[in-house]
Length: 102
Image (tube, rainbow, N blue to C red; front, side, top):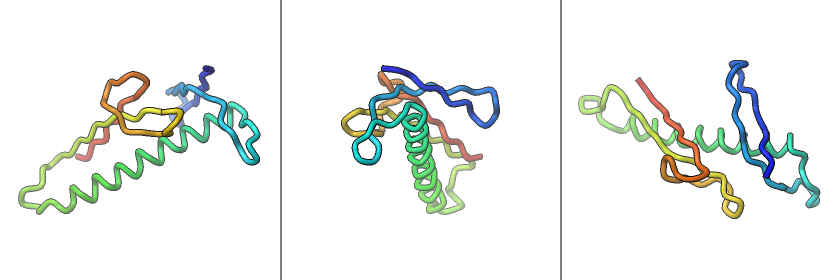
């Protein structure tokens, strides 16, 4: 499978994502650029939703026992049949996401 690369906003970090033959409207194949943007957008959306959910849970902890810091680490894997799935950290074909509130 081919890989696509995205240059992050910092202008230095490059992210590589494995591409498959995704289909667009009417079943027509998407170009690699569109496929890459779609997958990266889905990943970032999942990370954002997870962060919001974790933060909401953190705020429900009474302030007198709430930890001063919170760190959440999880894996995300791109699966052809299921799309994006949570996976064990360090699992094959997955990448680790760490969110930290201080």
